[in-house]
Amino acid sequence: MCIIASLGFGMKISDQRQFCSSCHIMKEAALTHKMSLHATISCNDCHAPHNLVNKIPFKVHAGTKDIYLNIFGKLEEPIHAGVNTKQVVNTNCKNCHTMTNSTVNSIDVKPFCTDCHRNVQHMRMKPISIRKVADA
Image (cartoon, one colour):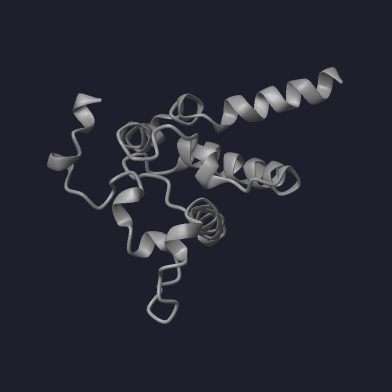
């Protein structure tokens, strides 16, 4: 029972913005998330599967990749989502925004929600001068 509680606590902590921003390569993403419309939800409410059986291996893989990029990657670049992560994020967008999805014309839809809703992605497509990250 103690192991399950510890695992649950660890999963909860490692889902939060404070944990994700502890790697300096993710500082801008954390700051822009803090100012976004999604500031009240955890990073992994969007970036990881909600099903625990799928979530654990996904987080292990993504976390290992993030650690590698923090050590050996180009630190001036944010970590870009791969296809797997984009699919997970897209699924989570659709699960939370079911009413919005019912009004979208499926003929004109691009592959990922963020293909059109770019500013939801941590305001990445806005010019730095508009983001106000320094104020956060």
